[in-house]
Image (cartoon, rainbow, N blue to C red):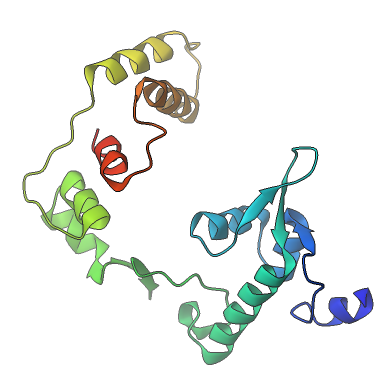
Length: 188
C-alpha cells in the first residue's frame, strides 16, 4: 500500500492515520513552515506528537487539502494560474504583485488611512476614522523593563520578541478568547 501511496500522494489513506510535519509538507509540496500557516488559517488541524515533540496531522485531512489545492492549480485559480499552491481567503488577495484587503488595494489603504484605521477595518469590517490605539501603562512599563535587561548588542527582532512576551504577561485577558477581549487586546 505504501508504494501505491507514494505513486499518488493524494491517493487513499488509512482511516485515523497520522502524518508528521515533514510528511505533511512533502504531501502538500510545501515547506514545514507553510504547514503551520495552514493550521493557523484553520485549513489543517494538528495534534501534539506522542512524547511532546512536533505535531501530527490527520492523513485524510491532509489528502483532502492536497486535492483541493491541486484542483485550484489545475483550474488556474492559483497565483497567476501557474500551478502554485494557493491559500484562498476572504480577507486577502495577491494579484499581479498587488495586495488587496477586503477587495481594496493595500497601497490605497496606506495612502488614505492610518495604521489603526486599517487594522480596525480588517478586524471588524467597519472603518472608524480617527481611531487610535493606546497601550496600557503597565504593559509599557513591563516592556521597558524587559528591554533594559537585554544586552546592548541585542538584535531588533530579539527585542521585539521580548517586548511582546513581557506585554502579553501583563495582559489579564490573555487567555480570554472572546471576540471582545481579543479585539480589546489587539487595540492596545
